[in-house]
Image (cartoon, rainbow, N blue to C red; front, top):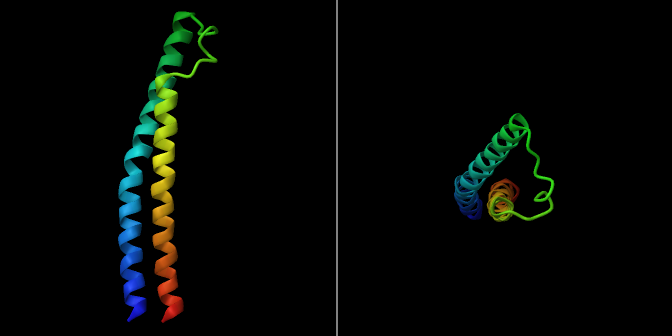
Length: 91
C-alpha cells in the first residue's frame, strides 16, 4: 500500500515540477534569443557597448530569477522521480 502512495506522490511531483519548470526555461531561451539578436544588430551597425558591458542589466537579473525558479522546480521533479523509484524499493 505504501508503494502505491509513493508512486502517486512521485508522479504528481514529477508532473508539477516539469510543468512549472517549463515556463522559466522558455522565458530564459527567449531572453537569450533577444540578446543574440541585439548583439547581431550592434555588430551590423558597427557600434560596441564597451561602456555598458560590466553593468548588470534588468535582463541579467530576470535571467537569474528565472534560473533559480527553474532549478527549484527541477529539484521538485527530481524528488518525484526519487519517490517513484522508492516505491519499487518498498514493494
